[in-house]
Image (cartoon, rainbow, N blue to C red; front, side, top):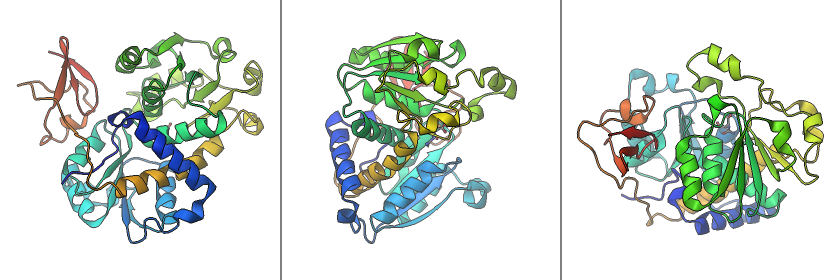
Amino acid sequence: MNYLHLIDLNDFPVKFWNELLELGIDIYHNPEKYAHACDGKIMATLFYEPSTRTQMSFQTAMLRLGGSLIGFDNPSTSSVAKGESLSDTTQIVSGYADVLVIRHPQPGAAKAAALTADCPVINAGDGGHLHPTQTLTDLLTLRLEKGTLENLNIGLCGDLKNGRTVHSLVKAMSCYKGNHFTFISTSELKMPQYIKDILSVHGASFKEVESLEEAIGELDVLYMTRIQRERFKSDEEYFAQKDTYVLDTAKLSLSKPDLKVLHPLPRVDEITTDVDKNEKAVYFKQAKYGMYIRMALIMTLLSNENRSIPLLSGKEYPGVCCSNELCITNSESYLPKSFVGIGDNVECEFCNERTLL
Ligand code: NCD
């Protein structure tokens, strides 16, 4: 059967995101109206990777809609530890639940799960690839805190290479008119090329800089991120990057009066705690807004059972495997190695990595 899955926000038109945001805003103002919207429904959360906010905000979202929960957040206590494939786990659990939320360390895992699930699947983060529900959270935060999603100079600072939240956010914000992006990172942790290519396709401008102090004065939004230690090959490489960017009150004083600072959290040490009480800091509010937009998303996916989006539209190229060793297609061998051709390259339909033919 076909279902409406949320794997990548860009699988949907902007109109769909805006409708979700409107619903999220209404839920935020009138939560009691929605207290029974999902009575009798069950949500499964399959968390193969650590999480506090995403998992708990999904869980409270479903509970506040009147639904119930099953799931795991420690794969070592489930059949995964016995070597069960992602496909089998998904098939079984989706037979118990009405909607499945998955977080997994490998890029492409949510799409792989959606291929076999017998219910809608929501991507709650697939490795360093995408995190669409964090982006919905960020869009709701910008709507409520900046009043607009257009004509903003958005600075993104930190681990732009491995941070899935920044990949999803930039892809989404490039679809709203007039936005400019300032990528603040070291040369080792730059924004991936495929994201920059998407900006070019959408006609959105961007620049890449290394200094937060020099860039901060021009920004309307500053999106801070932690250095993603778990995605580094060695501790040595991680420690070489750690503490490169720290936002403190002195740096914040160089910013425009109406700057808003967002962070998907968890914070390590990239924002000093004295910044928290500044009215420009909205990251704790942002975490709460995430619950309302997830309520809107769950309701929408559960009420659209006859709609679907195509998951794969490319093809297999004989003998070609994805060059991203972490890609889910390289560990779950039953998955189709499906690519879309781009010049001399093919782009993996699971993780978006390009492989030279
Ligand atoms: C983010 C994630 O998991 O990608 N956190 C979150 O979902 N709130 C950011 C991070 O872990 O750095």
